[in-house]
Image 1 (cartoon, rainbow, N blue to C red):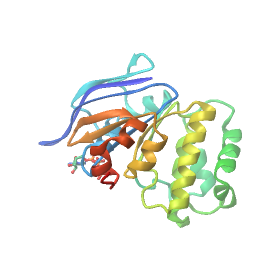
Image 2 (cartoon, rainbow, N blue to C red):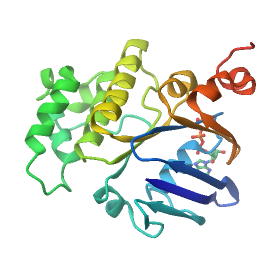
Image 3 (cartoon, rainbow, N blue to C red):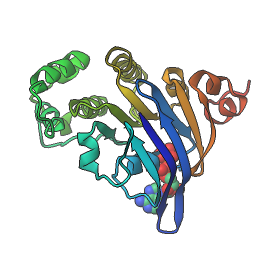
Image 4 (tube, helix red, strand yellow):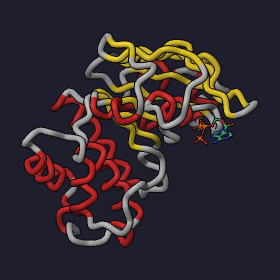
Length: 236
Ligand code: ATP
């Protein structure tokens, strides 16, 4: 579904991403793991056109989308849920959900809001509450739900579990796998929680200072000694 080749991103003189190539097949969950500063967020931000890339190509559904802008990417169903809880704090939960659908022209928006309320019952209860007054976990649920309201075909998520309690992390991960299995949503996921990410991923890439150090199926990487020692905190 998406093929990124030789992606390079520089911040001034800093080479944050240095020739990364990744493939995301349709209907699969792919994860990027790696140490702090390895270039994971930079990679997703460049693919979704939040920041400019220096060189490289991005093919999406057979089309060269390298030169398209952020809005055109969203219209094509390539959507990023960025790190941190980016909700509109002075708008209600419902208004945040509707904003997620602002580029859509179809008639399914109301049905999709109902679907989000089924997935996240807490958001239904809090529909008229200002998003800025939600708890951290609730704001993260809203950020995920708002991203889903754009009707993504390929959803990129930057650390959806950041700062969340274990039970909410479990909930968010089971929603991601459910959408993948039941609705065929393709997912590219970044996670500090490498174990949780590799457990649900079909394929994973380990980034090391701006390059791909290692890659393999989620199951292979979970068993890999180097990955276990460096990212899973296990010595055997
Ligand atoms: P983390 O797991 O800590 O979120 P990451 O793998 O997502 O890390 P990035 O945020 O992509 O890493 O950062 C990659 C490198 O680029 C880091 O060395 C970082 O300091 C640098 N960097 C990121 N954003 C900027 C910026 N706006 N200006 C300058 N350098 C930046």
